Amino acid sequence: MRSFFLLLLLAVAFTYGLPSSKKRFDGNQVLRILPKSSDEILKIVDMGKKYNVDIWNIPKSLNSTLDIHVDAHNLKEFVAELKSLGTNYMTWIEDLQKLIENENVHSSHVKSRAAASFSLSHYHSNFQISNHLDAVALSSRYATVHTAGHSVQGRAIKYLKVSSGGSKKAIIIDGGIHAREWISTAVVMYLIDQLAMNPDNNPEITSMLQKFDWYLLPVMNPDGYEYSRTNNRMWRKNRATSHSITGTCTGVDLNRNFGFHWNPAIGGSRDECEETFAGTKAFSEPESRAVGHLMQSIRGQAIAYLNLHSYGQLWLWPWGYTTSLPSDLADLKHMAGRGAAAIYPSHHAHYTTGGDATDLYPAAGGADDFAKGGAGIKYSYTVELRDTGRHGFVLPASTIIPSGEETLKGIIAFASELYAYERL
Ligand SMILES: [Zn+2]
Image 1 (cartoon, rainbow, N blue to C red):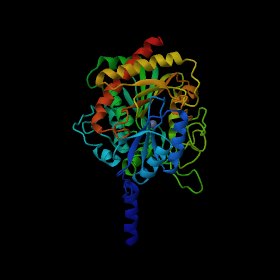
Image 2 (cartoon, rainbow, N blue to C red):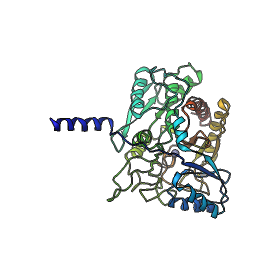
Image 3 (cartoon, rainbow, N blue to C red):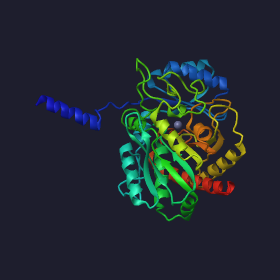
Image 4 (cartoon, protein in one colour):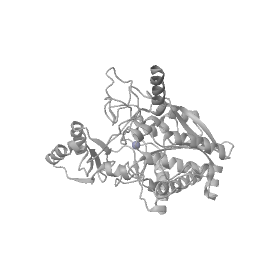
């Protein structure tokens, strides 16, 4: 009998997860630094390793900021060392835990057209999202649900294809490559509702469905996403554990793992304990492989790829792995400009365009680089959604709908210009 209960307990634990201690961030701060040179950035990042700091934002230009999340117990020493380097800083987020506790305070319940119980204005579990994709596929005339692959822990990486039929050029949009960037997943869910259900009978959306097929993948990193919900809100990587015999650290940065000029020495790391661990080889991870396969499976058809992240309000073109620029830069710039400019009018969120790598900080193994260089998708971008750092990754749920609305505007403008510009 006892062993029966033990088995039952194990089964329950396996199904629902063991009660976990959720990491707290009391007194943790985010410091903001305006660096004077790339040398200074490297020095600070290097010094930060000693204090186990978590880099929230690496500047793309000398006008942008280095944002660093520091544990409460390391704060005093870290700040002292910053000062000794002669670096000026601001305390940008006073108490990260307070921000996290306010994240899900929301006022509205914006129902999905496909299932009234699914609120587009909330953050959801991967399980709820997965079920909702099925619900959309059932209710929409245009949407079909597919699985690109499975995560390390066996979760399906699902996407919707939204198509009015026939053979058209395709646009791929994904979110959640970095676990903690929840807004990117929530925005893809909003886009899905608009494109697959067109709840307001918006003629611009009808026109977009006539012009393109849409591939929408909300959670590229489902294990990491769940872990960021249940254990550690600041988790970034996937949940791979098999990288060393000691097995001391978990996770690969999927946006350093794609197989085009993969190189941990460029903006990544060979150390499994670092946030930018690039994996043991290109495409070592099932999540990046799944999305890479999806891109290649529609090679020739796919013309644009938007890899959604947060934060920074940036629309960035390749390459990430090198500071040299693609030969069709003029086209990439033109289209990024159209998208970014169209985001602004809805809620006055200002988006800047630029190169993914700059002289300051190249990073290899990105999804955008592979889309362009490996899968031949000409218009490939990294889009950093809201905000510019006030909440960073912990964007209040009340901003999901405005973020979705403005991103939709940007994407419609981008796609309609793409259709005209490429004479499709
Ligand atoms: Zn990211």
